[in-house]
Image (tube, rainbow, N blue to C red; front, side, top):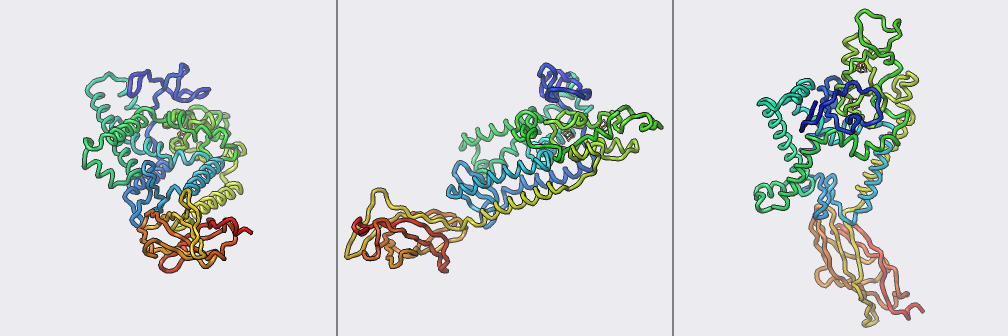
Length: 480
Ligand code: SF4
Ligand code: SF4
């Protein structure tokens, strides 16, 4: 019985071999708490290394700057965005939108071919759950059997001590994660400033921080694998994204079935038995509480724990490894070995092109954005055979460097520009500047009441940084 954090009945999950419901629910719809055995083996080691790298990235990136800009900052409140140290503005929205669409296509194509590798190796939920919170749990409460025993026992001194220690550690780590998450929104300097000035000076931010801390605590202490099985939309999409050619963690049913317990010195082949010795080690290690031998299931996050567990068993009984392995369903059915198929190669190339395309968009968006708009209700005026239009310019410096800019009309020629001050416009890095200019043409050069005009913005080296197409207005009679 039981579980955690409460006292609902614990039900053994090992004997679930056939079912129509989510693996962590009993027939009445009640949650079955999962106590996975601590995984160990080759894939677990690889995942550990990958998780160390990703945790280092998560906790390190907020402090990384490129040319003084944050490496990654998504400040939706003040609408400040930095990706790879490059500032993005609302004017770059189409790139972000294209980036979002490209990412969705990328994820879908990737999943069609490579399955849920993202879930097991890269997803922050799996990363924090299995590589941080679960490890703390093992450290405080011990492995599966000890956790189950502790769960069943009365609330004595040992249980109170261990649970309080675990919950305090979980709350502290949730608080740390919430702080780092905020660094990705407002920057580490701001988070440190808020911390130094204390909650009394930032009550709203303090409440938001507490809210996110509690959310993380709830997710990692209680919700856990339910995020993957019930909440995550990506998990829900698996049914339509994977097919028989998709790589996933599979149980080799052709080799394994005829499962039966191991008997020393028995010739299993002669006895018509498969290689699965029905030891349930692949089941008890599963963090989502499923039996991989029932085939691909939506709960499976491809964490590879069952591969390691089964390989360990195979080693012990002297059978070949790989009864549970990364494979495609077609390979299992045809008993083929893994091949990097043409479909996989083509998809990999296409995914690389998609990333290249996105990189090109980000690289090619320019360091300057210029706009020239007529003030509302303004019109032209004529003096001394010259026609003048007023424009409001908006210059956005997307780089970190100071720019000294001049404005020139590219077409038509013969324009005069009145800057209402210095001809040199000085713009600091990451700055937006607005101002007025008058553009004047000899009356004879303006042939239409709305004459197309291109205005260029140049830096001090004479390089054009951006241009803008607009119209120059003249009197209607010039149409004649
Ligand atoms: S079935 Fe295997 S790979 Fe899938 S979640 Fe369970 S242990 Fe991980
Ligand atoms: S660990 Fe391997 S041998 Fe044991 S039950 Fe699972 S698939 Fe069968």
